[in-house]
Amino acid sequence: MPDADDRPLHDDALRWLCHPTTCVAVAVLLLNDHVLKAAFGTWWTGKLSDAAGLLVAPPLVALVLALAWRGPRPRSDRVVRALAVATVGALFALVKVAPLGAAVASAAWSLVDGPGLVRSDATDLAVLPVLALAWRAGAGTRPGPGGTRRPTAPARWLVVLPVAVLATVATSAPAEGDAVQAVAVVDGVLVVRLQDGERLLSTDGETWTAATGSPTQDAVTSALAAAADQPVACRPDRPDECYRPLGADDADVEHGPLGVERSTDGGRTWRVDWVVPAELLDTLARRYDPPAGAIRTRQVAVLPTSAGDRVYAANGGDGLAVRHDDGTWERLGHPSPEGFDDVVPIPGRPDTPLLPVPPALPVGVAVALVVVAASGRRPDVSVAPGRRATGVALLASSGVVLAATAVVDHAWRTLPGGDDLVAAVRVLVLVALLAAGLALVGAAAAVLHRGAAFGLAVLVGAVVVVTLLVVGSVWAAVAIAAVAATGGVVLARRSTARHAPWPDEPLPWGRLPGSG
Image (cartoon, rainbow, N blue to C red; front, side, top):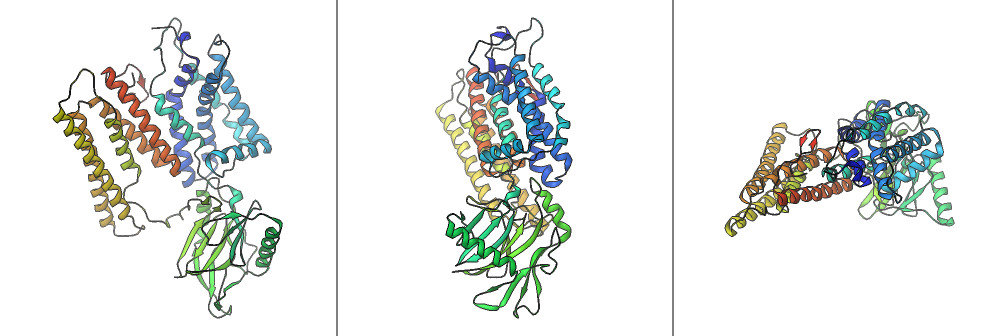
């Protein structure tokens, strides 16, 4: 085999990315940002995210530097590795120490993952020594004196690279600036003011545009000022039916209450119409990433619509809530010209129906189906036409089973608190359907002599399932599934063409079928 110095410059960066230390850091980053922060949201989740990021970022930066390198190959791969570690360390320190650096980082993250906030915090510099571990992981990819290496990087980078990039940038979280501070109605148009001063307009409470132009801005400012002076909002068609923020008489409370009171006698008596228990507000605030600012109902407004009057409540860090004409309340989230962010569930009381089986499971089986179907045939094995037709029919049957599973899963979604026995039966039925779909894929692989491709397909499908379970963004989930399926197909076709089911490159968790 050729000497390591004869390989492309980016080869070492890809090996660094596939090092067990980096792979573990990617998993920790996904788990922490999308599960632990929502559950705990305390100082250690922030430090853990920083530490994992400092392990994942250097090999990614090294890969960019290697691809952009236009001069002669450096005498040692230590040059690129040192530049990558130094760049990551310097940028991290700049962001954590200088408010301007944090503002630039926030703007950059917002471009790729929606509104986001990066805070400057000098105490985060305590995790900088983790870069030494990153350096050691990069150095561990080099052969010893006189050692040789495979001429190319391990093919598993096709899976690791996209997951690492998505883990780094996919942090779906509303920024503090999205907090809804005020709400009012101007000439039949709903107006909200966000914490960063931006004004948004809506005629239906669903689609939003920014308030632009001097006359519009002046009218909006006047309406919001008037609403601040008068916390009570009444229905135009029923003047005796009025609403006000819960605890409006105690406006000095910093955090909470979150709720609305209703009066049907013109404001003489009031009763609670909607409320989130005060003991849940701290946990709800921590479920946001970054943790939400003050959550409390600040103002209410009544918007007449063709479907009836709607009451909107400005809830600070929890966004907007609406009372429909039938009397039911719904938390909407944070408005923006792109729509509403996903609603953060109230602890112990999710507002949205839950699926019996997470969508990640049928998606993982579907990825396995795609990998087997597109893996191609082995050059040393001929498949009779009848056998090929049987295999195709089995793959098609698996697709039908998966589609039926997705439809039934959606139809059976329910709010928590229902009959546990019914829920358990539904889960068992759906799991049985998924197992049947995977079994059909396996049977098709056996008929078509694609056993090695099936092993790889199961592994790639499992990676997709685990990743999707911790990634909240829909677009990130779609990208992960597409990239993983593409990488799995490439590896499967390589394995099939070479009819070598097991490579000679070990992974941290074992050997990867078809990556040789």
